[in-house]
Length: 51
Image 1 (cartoon, rainbow, N blue to C red):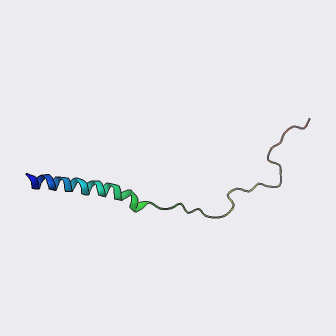
Image 2: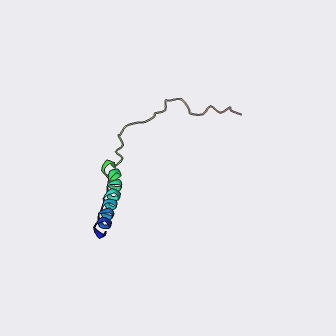
Image 3: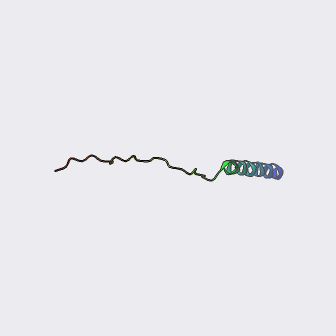
């Protein structure tokens, strides 16, 4: 009976370790690329009426 309990505990531990290790294997740092995302032209952004 003790052997079965130990085997069950070991299996549970191995399953929990595998579940926790899967997200760590695919984790990557964010690596942004450089460059201009959006550039305004020479005209003003807002056309407000002049008083």
